[in-house]
Amino acid sequence: MGTFHEQKQLVENLNLKSGETWRGQCFFCNGNNTLSVSNIHNTLLWYCFRANCDTNGCSKGTLSKYDIAQTISARENIDNPTTLAIPEYWQHIADTGSETDMMKWLHAHQIWQMATRKLLEIRFDPKQGRVVLLKTHAGMATNAIGYSLNKDIKPKWYKYIAGRSPFIVDPGSNICIVVEDVPSACVVAAAGLAGVALMGTTYMDPYTAYITRYKYAIIALDKDATQKAITIQQTLSFFMPTRMKRLKTDLKYHMHQDLAKLLNHKTMFANGNFITEV
Ligand SMILES: [Zn+2]
Image 1 (cartoon, rainbow, N blue to C red):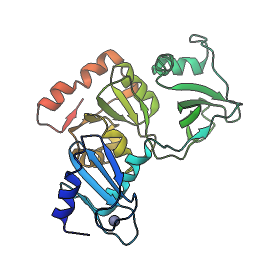
Image 2 (cartoon, helix red, strand yellow):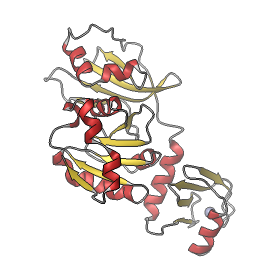
Image 3 (cartoon, rainbow, N blue to C red):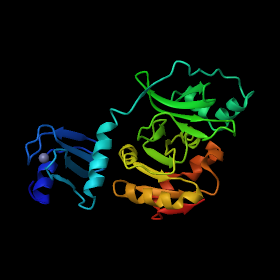
Image 4 (cartoon, helix red, strand yellow):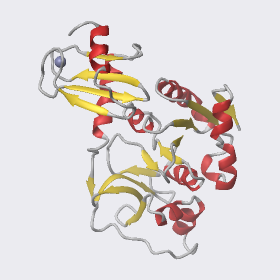
């Protein structure tokens, strides 16, 4: 398997640019297509997937073998996400202004507006009585989450796909804001930034592969999720400039005009404070 420095030298010789991945023959065990290499913000990760080959590493030298494997696998899976055939009984929703609770909710959090811009899609699931927010690719759903406006239906949010990708609403920004839920991600997108919704209490390692495709990351979770936010900030800081914003009010109740000011990345990244409170 060679020494760390031998491995690093061979991997560097591939000359991968930031954001690129490479898969090919392992330099050490000669496994056919078993070695995967990723350049994430100029940190190189490499991992050989052949059993018994212990070729793996990180150019910064401090990631565990497990983290390297997780991050590299997720990076490769971005182009082959878990998908769901969209059920035929899911209904399209017509715009009825703000006549119904559902339309009020969709408009209040910019979800309808972002769907009009094709940053996500909306359906209604009559079986579960849920509004379904989804991302699609080639006619398949790659992410689908249902929200119940009826307080008696539990859970409030239901994940239709047990995939391990965050729900991203991106108007084409190189700055991403990590948020709790899809409405918050839509509010962020309306302010011109990419919203990355965790949709759950835990941060999954594969999320890192998605988030590191952006240039900067800002973690903006609720105040009661501070510990989670710190963990995410530490994970992402390894690869990219990351800041944390501690919120007094849930992001989705901010108007997008004041959000742009709130998440002003220029001031956040110019000063050295990793955490700011607003
Ligand atoms: Zn190998």
